[in-house]
Length: 203
Image 1 (cartoon, rainbow, N blue to C red):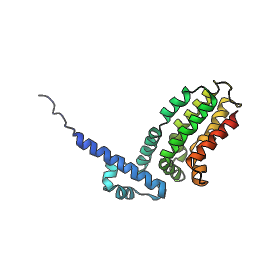
Image 2: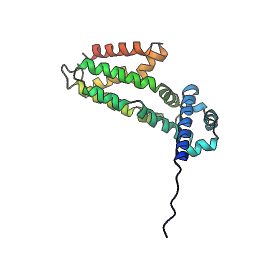
Image 3: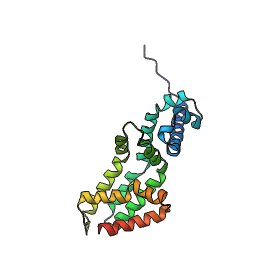
Image 4: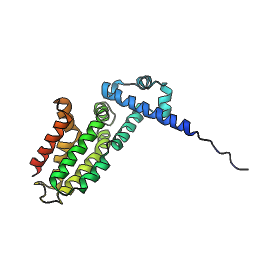
């Protein structure tokens, strides 16, 4: 006698995926607005229009939710596609211009995610590991850009590692936040000035 096959409803799976997405969206907004430490699972459930039990069953604990937000933010930033464009360019100016635009778009589109993570750091049980997980791919991409720049003519004035550090200083999330949020610059203005600063600073 053959084993009974378990029927999986595509509509049910789709509804569950939509519920997870809504929970993560509302949690991201709440973490960014109120701070991770001040938000409860009940708050997230209320904002998403579901029961607290649904949050736990669909995504997990508050810590699990934050982990999912980090994972989704890395993918949604579009850094892989941006890096493909950057590494295909063959002049320092065009590389830095594409890097400025790509990191601007990533930070602008994922601003709420970065705010949620930033506000979680002081109260998270392992804030350093959280920040490392959230930014590792970002830093790797800037290191790859630095190595690429050193293969072009002329190369930057500084060694590869220092060039990568400077790219992080100019193009990392903290730099964008300082200019746009803390100083009130437009994203367009910040992109233009950061690009020019990187060209002048590296060459």
